[in-house]
Amino acid sequence: MPMPRGMRSEGPSRAAIGRRRRTAMKDVSRADRVKGAIVGALVGDALGVGPYWFHSKEEIEAHYGPWVEDYVAPVPGRKLSELEPGESSPMGRQVIRLLESVAACGGYDEADFTRRAREAGVNWSEIGGFWDTSNAAVRQTVLGVRYAADLELAMEKMIANTILTHYDPFIVGQSVAFGLNVSAVIMGVPIDKISNLLMTIRKESERMVLPDERVPAVDPAEYCPDWIKNDGISYRIPVTWLTLKGTDSPGDQTTYHEAVDAVYQFRYAYDAVNNPGIAVEPAGEAVTMFGLPCQMSMVLPAAYYLAARYEDDFETAVLTAVNSPGQNMARAALTGALTGGLVGLTGIPGRFIEGLADHERLVDLASQVAALVERTA
Image (cartoon, rainbow, N blue to C red; front, side, top):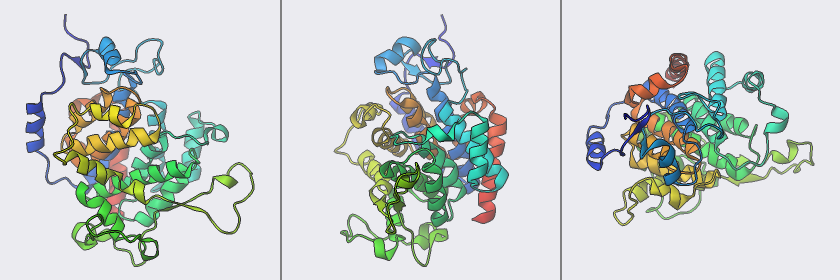
């Protein structure tokens, strides 16, 4: 009996993966990267809806076979079982509302975004809190690409959007740092140069004294001349949550959280992938190493690892995230954003795009944002 749509008898062979990596796309336009990151995040989210949150690989296999390779329906009675294959999760729908808003307004307009989300059923009086999830980070895909050429503005917009739902300054910093890494990918900065470049352009007054071998200087003019700023970039996150629920103000002196280490996570994942002394086989076992739960400190490092390991191969990167247990939906969305930005929309398999619910409209919205980026970069 043939296997149902979205399943196959085994995962991709190592030889097939190697062939795909050897034929990597070398010249991807900025517009294609923008569209790839946005659509990639939505594809990862929708692919994760079916096999969402099983506690082991064996549980996934019991329902879907050894390897999920396409959109599949959730198991009846489980969370998200009301959704059809290819439909977006509530997290993905937040991304879509933000995408619609940015395309319509030309940039981030908080009132417009919150109105659209409210009309879609979000209760803003209840949604904010000390959550440690990745939902806000996935949303920063849209703002990371829109403001990729202006990191100061990107920081401002991403912080404002993140604190709508997440108050913990550590989580805000992680979410914004993810957006900055997406920005760097969109601008075509190689993974192994992103963190060092972000440190090179940091405000002089906020730089730490670190050995050159850890933070070698990178010439912005070589990799991203758009990022050259006279006064540098600050990665400080203002701790604003004290005033969000009507509690006492923190006072005249603002407290800040340093997000510098969060900016470095993608580089450390890249270093781990390319360190011959670190062997994780199969790649999905990295999820066990970082942790299965929804907490961002576990989900995000796994996404960075998979994007760094399969930087030329959207399919394997995202499907490895999907076929691993735990919070595979957010992991796949984050992986999809980064890898989609690396390979561009043209590097995402057609079946993933065509199977995504409302894909023509979503690709059109992503194209509108790409046009905005091209005009302002």
